Every structure is written in C-alpha cells, then in structure tokens.
Image (cartoon, rainbow, N blue to C red; front, side, top):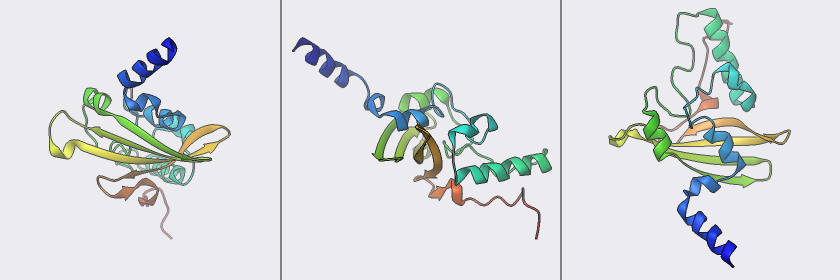
Length: 159
C-alpha cells in the first residue's frame, strides 16, 4: 500500500510528458537539453524516408553552392529560426499515440517567454525500424506545412 501511495504521489508531481514513452523520447532529443538542427548530417540515423530524401537534396544543394542558403533555412522542429532555449525547455509538452510500428508525437511549446505568435504545435511521425523509433516526417500545425512535402530543387540538375 505504501509503495502505491508513493508512486501515485510521484505520478502527480512529475509532468505528464515524463510518462510519454519511447517514441516521445526520440522527439525530446531534438528539443532538450538543447535544440538540435534536424537536417544536420550527424543526426541522419534518427530519420527515415520520406523526410531523408529532402535532407539528401539539402545536402546536395549545400555542396553545390556552399555560400547560399540550401533548401532548409529554418529549424523544422521549431518551425522557426530564432528561439529562447530556456523557454522551449520549460514549456515543452509531448504526447504520443502509438499504433504498432508507427507513432505520432505532438510537441507543443513556446519559442519565447512573451508573444502570441511564440506558441508552436508540431506533429512528428515516427516508424519503428530495427527496434528503434525513427522520424519519418515533421508537420507544423501552427503554420500548416509538412517537411516531406517541401520542395528542394537547389540540389537537382535542371532537366
């Protein structure tokens, strides 16, 4: 009985995001303790198609024209270029829906301590690949776009 009371007290004392689960942990990696740029090559193993195709085109564009902005000129997980890390970390809430080998994780947070346009709602689609959750797409409910649907012609040769 005493153990149940302690667990119940812990469950109410900790934020709900702490119990979101493994798919949410794969998303949390990109927000805390520090925001990470999803298109960075060092994180490529955390993604799968279709979004990896856009990342590959972004890499090609960067190699062809290193002095120009490539296809992805913002942080997809933030739906922004600028942010306050303390605010993102403090306001981040994750919820997940898992259906077998696929999951959807919704991340809500604020970019800055003030401002109505600071609020973001991002939906991360994940697939389980070799026992690990990998991101297959990111969508902004705030700005109504999906990463895999963005066009990147900069890395392609004209036909």
